[in-house]
Length: 209
Ligand code: AMP
Image 1: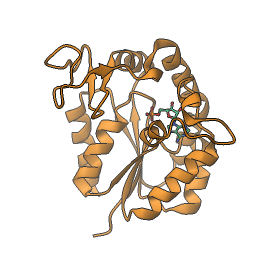
Image 2 (image 1 turned 90 degrees about the horizontal axis):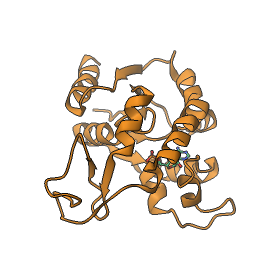
Image 3 (image 1 turned 60 degrees about the vertical axis):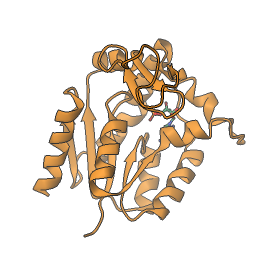
């Protein structure tokens, strides 16, 4: 079977990480997450500054840095789900020069819901597991259920940075939707539901072919 090449689009907090992991497990394909790759390399010195300096302001990291990361990862994989890329039209055009894409899945969630999700999100400082103070609290306050390490708030999940990330999404990433919307393989999924139901909707799309 030919392994699929999938782009997962959606605003910050739409659940791309969760659904990206489920898709990658289901097909046995690579989960390429630019946000994680950039956080790991946050202190990398480049001519344009460190990735961390952009992340902390909620701004996009320059295309040249991100494109290179994605190209290396795509070349290694025969099937993949891209999570958090492309984030602007230039990246979408660049992607079209390095790979074909079979499906573009857009997780649609309203802004008020995103702010609630992002401001309550907590992440394990050691294994990266995600929690939410209201919707998915850990069993023991402030500690990871899996490895007992301390839970922290991502530096870009502070209210002011969240608002900037949402502004950056509507300014830069909405044009990516316009770029893909009339292409074969584009699907919009209601992302407001709980993660199990969202996954069910995505799985159905693949089963229907
Ligand atoms: P995420 O974890 O996907 O919400 O990404 C966190 C941050 O990483 C974003 O707010 C950006 O600063 C940066 N980032 C992630 N993906 C990209 C991308 N494709 N282009 C530029 N910056 C990105």
